[in-house]
Amino acid sequence: MTILLSPTDNVTATLTINGESVVGDNSFDVINPATGLVFATAPDASPTQLDAAFTAAQNAFGGWQRDEDLRRNALRNAADGLGAAIDRIAPVLTAEQGKILSESRREILGATSWLRYYADLELPREIVQDDEKVFSEKLRRPLGPVAAITPWNAPVYIGVAKVATALRAGNTVVLKPSPFAPLSTLLVGEILRDVFPPGVFNVISGNDQLGPLMTGHPLTRIISFTGSIATGKRIAASAAADLKRVTLELGGNDAAIVLADADPEFTAAGIFGAAFSNTGQVCVGAKRIYVAEAIYPELVDALVAEARKARIGNGADPDTDLGPLNNLPQRNFVAELIADTLATGGKVVTGGHVIDGPGYFHESTIITDVNDKSRIVAEEQFGPALPVMSFTTVDEAVARANDTKFGLAGSVWSADEDHGADVAARVEAGTVWVNTHKALSPRQPFAGRKWSGQGVEGGPWALEGFTDPQLLYRAR
Image 1: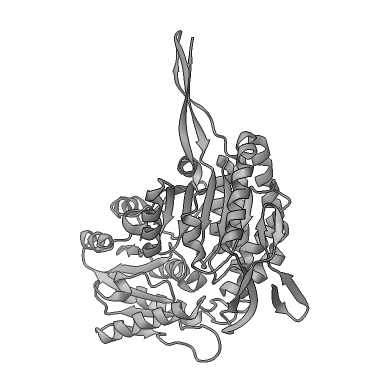
Image 2: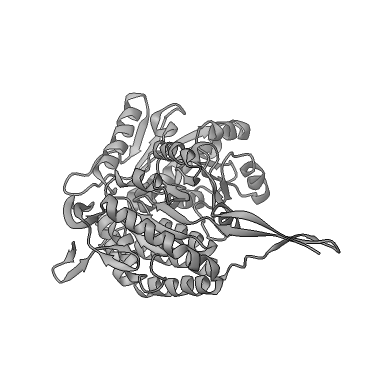
């Protein structure tokens, strides 16, 4: 399968199974969202190839789990390998996903930070009892092969984050990216083939029907999934039949609350970056904004100014600020939400239209005069359309922010940091920032509340989800 990025740049995309390059039994097309045209094919793994990947992971598990020094050194080497290959991976990621090249580079660097963090993380034993009769300690034991499934918005960052956590804990991995953006992950598999022992890290790709085969595979002991709520529910139901462990990150409808003492210009710049980076296709991006009445007009004007100066175009162009949406269904969904807003009394103050021409481009859109029951507010738009609403009291703002089935993240903006933190503590979300938004780190716990998921990613807390406790008891 060949990826054509330019007339002189040919890259072959293959599966990684048991440390070897494997050609898929079939293939599927990959579209460049900036052109709307097929620019590559990717391998479509067969059920037999999926079985081979999990068998390899199971066979490698015993030796891998017993050698902690090997695991730590391999993660460091993997970070070095990805960092050295950033100029290979970033153009592929931009071509298949649509994000601007600088964001692709940041995504890859962010992925290396997860590998380095877990390589250096100590896993101390916890002494339970130590006296003249008993010495007992709690250990953490890995589970076995992990089925890791990632979305199309940040495939390298999210995929490597799962892999780093799972491998550090002593598990092995079979990783599957979305069929909308498979190539960069396949390339990661190629680059790291010689870093890990055969079978420890396997990468497959395929269409959506491959996912249920992964999550239902008898050798899968834990499923780590990032994606839609509907798919997450199906995975949880399927996993229950075999008592498989699940970690689910299922998106968010993240509220930003702007208090009356916030600086409109500073706040608008921060919120716009958090809402429109990767063209709004970020799970923790700001999705709905609640602004104190006293500064509402100024904040709206400042957001409109930010939207109008952001340059939209091909992510490979260095002059571009915002690229296309990743796929046509997602662009159509954003357009559908905007149409619903207009039909129910909302006002588009800038943007609002699909951009004519090739590719999946949409104008950066700011929406006002919209109520909380509107679809653009109640649903996760995952695109470049931002509803901005006013509030009278802080209690009202918090209640409206919490009136959702989502609970992934949020932010509070205020000149009084302590007051902002007090308000943030009342927001029902796994992460709430003060005077910033979308500040992520592998050392932080990242978890969703309500329908935004279950389990934790990041820090030592994530390792608990990838392990079982074991009590080692010695009688004296």
